[in-house]
Image (cartoon, rainbow, N blue to C red; front, side, top):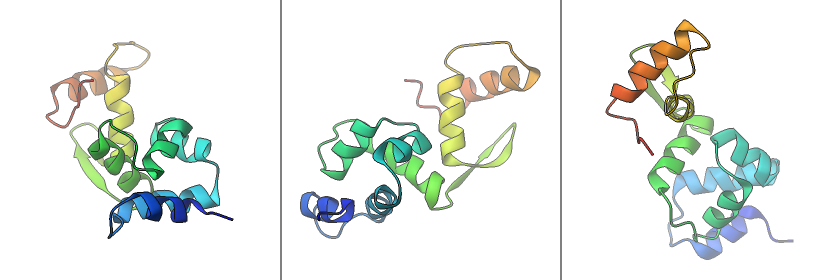
Length: 120
């Protein structure tokens, strides 16, 4: 039986990036749908990434994987030290202003003026 790690090793140049290895190992522990949901992407994107066929923003996915399972953090002016996945989630939420709470309004302003925001 082929494991997600076997698939990644067959399609990525050596040495396999550490974050791709972590992603592949997580795919062995849970479904690709669950892995994708945890990092804010689809199961199809996870599959493409394991096969080194994803042509989107690899840096954003690397940051999401590092934040979800490798302890990567950033400093947010509103929330303090947060995982990179939380930062990316708020960046996506900040694209549209929805005044459901004071916190959401503060995050909208902070995220839209933050140099880390991918804005797209």
